[in-house]
Image (cartoon, rainbow, N blue to C red; front, side, top):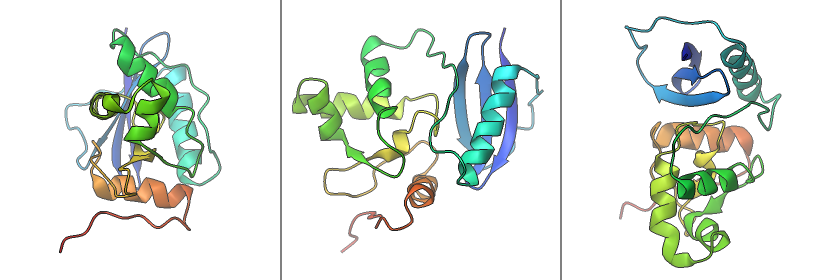
Length: 163
């Protein structure tokens, strides 16, 4: 069975979905999903509570059962490394690729990072370009910048140079 709930956050609406064994997804959207029918479940309720504490700067790491379903093993290994990035810190795609055995895996790390179903909880927003610039984020670059600044207000976030 699948359970879901929508919560409002400083970066938009978060749709949380869980199975009986763990949280399956946190999806960021600018619009409230009109066709949403909420279903109460202890995992979803706990995820909402922890996300609220995170946005209030009262929680730095999540303690939730996660359900990655049938995701590829490589993706799961990338997501496991994302979970190890400390609150307020960042890593580059290259650094994660090196942890997995080779810099030539940077593109694959980017693809796995981009397919992370658990935004914020599995902190893919903490992955940046090797030059410190912000790179793609499923919730949009403003959301990524917000999350990085929430975690570390002293950090200078670079979005790249236009000229």
